[in-house]
Length: 257
Ligand SMILES: [Zn+2]
Ligand SMILES: [Zn+2]
Image (tube, rainbow, N blue to C red):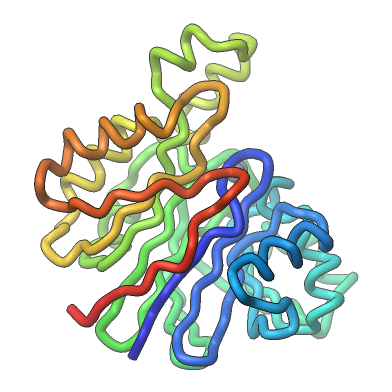
C-alpha cells in the first residue's frame, strides 16, 4: 500500500493538506478561495473533482474559509467535529459527517484517527492517517502537548508538525501584547522548541520525514524551525522539510517500513 501527502500551503494565511493512498484522495482543511484552491491543486497534478473527502480540523478561517464553496462544487463528504461543522450542517446536510475524538473511520483504504487538541476554537481535532503499515500524523494549531496527543502520534513514519513561532522573535515582534499572550498560551500555537521536544520524545525509529508547518511569517523563520528540529533530533532524521505559505510542499511518498 502507498501513502503520500502534499501541502497546498501552510500558515495563518491559508492551509490545505492532501493525503492519498491508491486512488483515494483526501483534502484536510481549505483556507483558500475556490480559484486559488484549484490553482494550488493543479500545481500538484490534482483536479478538485478527484477529491473523495474533505476533513476539517477546526473552524478558524485559515482552515475552513474555502470549505463551503469547495464542498458544494465537489459534492463529496465533509468530515469534522460537531463544534467545527455546526455552521455548515444546515447548509450541506447531505454531505456533513460528524466525527469524534478517538473514533476512527475509513475513506477508501485510509483509516483516520481523529484526536482532540487544546486550541482556542470550538472542538478542534487533528488526525493520524493509516494505510497498510504506513502511518502519517498531522499536528498544527495546538497550544500545548497533552499525553493524549503523544499517544496518538506514536509510531508515525511521517509527521506534519506545527513550528509556529520562536519565543525570542515573538517577544520582539509586531504583535500587540494580547495577541502574543494568545499565541504562546495553552490554547494557542506550538513553538519551535515545544514541537522539537515532542518529536524527540516520540518513538522516531521509523520516522522517514518530518515537516515543519504553520510557520509564522512575523514571529519565526524556516531557519529557526529547522535549527531547532535538527538540534532535537540529531542524526535521527535527516529528512526535515518545510511546508511554506505560498509554495506549500510537493508530494512526499512514505516508503515501506
Ligand atoms: Zn491555523
Ligand atoms: Zn487555529
